[in-house]
Amino acid sequence: MTARLEQVTVYARGARVRRSVPIAAGATEAGARAIRVGGLPLGVIDDAVRAEVRGTGLVAGVRVVLDPAIASQTGPIGDDLHAARARLAAADAELAAIDAALTALAALTPSPRRGPHGGDAPAPWAEVFDARLALHELRLAREGALRTRHAAAVRERRTAREQLEAALEQAARAGATREVKLHELHKAVVVDLLPDAGVLAGEVVVEYAVGGARWVPSYGLVLGRGPARLELRAHVAQCTGEDWRGVALTVS
Image 1: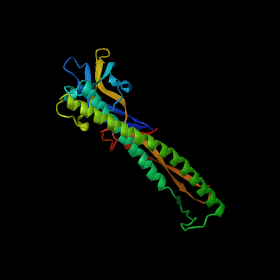
Image 2: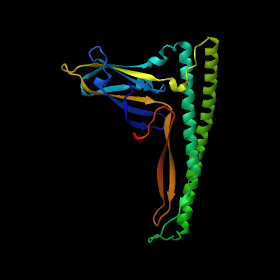
Image 3: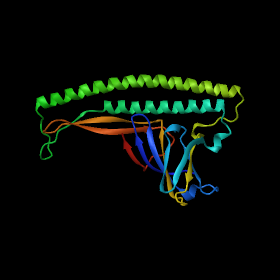
Image 4: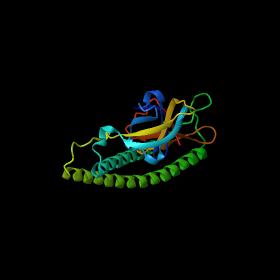
């Protein structure tokens, strides 16, 4: 079953997602000993999944599996194809994030200063010059780093596309069945549970790391009567296949 999405923490590379599901709703017939959380992105990092019981009960084990809908199409060729698609999706997300950062950087301009009564007041020339010089140096340093990352991301995307084309060609030669679309590929987390003092109740909380997401900062320079002030904004880009709208989101 698909668990409720509670929180997302986005890092410079990747994100950590937290979901929860009631124990009774996801219990198996074998004495309510396991819960399966399906519909997770293919980019879930298997060894970064953890689970806990919010209530009464103990977690006996956690494992990551492919959803049954695509399990029959797995194998060496299918695994290569899935990995190639996931790598290309991550490369696309990386490029989108860098492009967004470059666009925000290009739009970075000093904001006009407001007077004490809402009117415009000319700022001292030395203050304006120092602020613009600081902004120029910031843009040069930031743009240089972004351009370097952009070139590396373009190379990674080209390599990922070549890998995907090779995997598709191999699958075609092997007489593979219907090609699986990227949006059809999902993973599932199976959480094995044990009762605590004979009681198993509450909900299971699952946290997992996923690639294909990142955040980048943008800056705005505000000139006032005092020292110039830099404002930081966060731009989030993700290509995980999950819908994060309306979910508590933080950046780190």
